[in-house]
Image: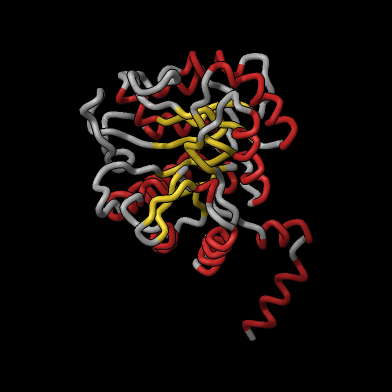
Length: 288
């Protein structure tokens, strides 16, 4: 009887309505957002353990650091042999993690065309469409050319003041001014807080140039601060996410958790909960 009732509902529903019902997705999907675990969060573990832990969190995407652990070896990701990358790919697929990685970095890009081209070739071979880097100023013209040639994005990462040229969004904007839209920012909110910058102001400055995020919240402003679960620190991640919705940002929110490095899982699980709940709230508010 239940089967007959369901069949009747299907027949009576307009085709478009049934198609919509069948394609319902999460709030994040509807906003055009993906939540990914950055493998650096599990730097004390092998890349295979990091994949397993990501799956246990219920997260379906990953980004990979510029270095990964395989066994007891810490290896440069872009130098990994095919057999290791194939093994990583197989583990991700087996664990239900989307292949390929959503981005890779921080990687080394420079004005040396042969060396930089090698990184782009690696990304192209493994279908990775975004490189996260902190390139020197004399490489900007070359990277513009390589981005266009390979159709691969370069997201400029921002370590905190004293550790990076790009600690302030103004330097990122200078780097990408009048260049391909494939060049933009990997907005690291935790490092902005370490530098004493207001993340909301920074995001507004970068309107249209945010490619991906290392989304974080810290327990206090300044260099002594450390990561805490999203929504429990000094920042306002709800407002940051709402600003990104206003900008029509479609991309990756990366969990790069740098505290409790021996066991970040409980805190990262709270970040996942906050993200999903806030996506629900922002999507609902946008429809009112």
